[in-house]
Image 1 (cartoon, one colour):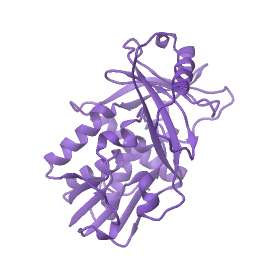
Image 2 (cartoon, one colour):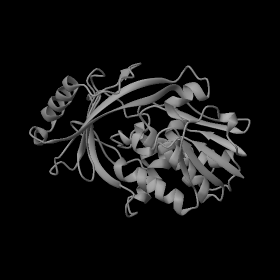
Image 3 (cartoon, helix red, strand yellow):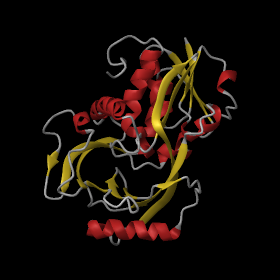
Image 4 (cartoon, rainbow, N blue to C red):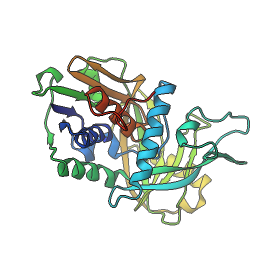
Length: 309
């Protein structure tokens, strides 16, 4: 079977790698190279954000959590397990995705909120690692326009086009949620921090291999990719108020990405097309679990490629 995967973000590349590992001849075609996708902007802390439905997302998140835990030992994969805290009010119930962490004691309630260890994926390393893994397995990545899924020469097509699925799948339920991040040099910061208590002022601090990602924004329906200096200043101020070590951290870069949000992640077969898009702000969190299910839909051997129950 020859499969073409559309999209070179973390979902598309992971799907293609899993298909190749399952013995399926898969290649990737995309309008943008990996470094210009929304995935390249992501802070990439494992966390189920803006993705539904609960049951399927929990299952995919659990599978991805386990796989990323394995990849933390893989040289060059850009994955590290880091402890951190999500600040929540005392009365807040346990998160609906708690079971995805893999154990009843994996999440601890502290005076500040929920403390747990989760994978952090440095996308500046992980995306090239996925491309290299795909090529090592015999796959190819081609950057070119895709006008129609049905025009692709393959036995099956996997649509991982993210926001591009609005046009390729004619799906008007896919909307953009703009996210802006600031990358700073702050080597003393080694734990992540998340605060969503005010949805208008999303705060996250995510240390990577060579920098720390500060965020952020979640502006529904806004598709402007130009960084806003006032937003940059506001993000830095909010993060430094919670982590004083960030106050004078030099700015390395500012970036904007558009999260592809949908009422429900679409993962289903439609004729010779398998749709896999609408992962919201949880592409890294869902990538491996969704890829295993795509492989199962395309007839891969059971086992780790079986669809979540």
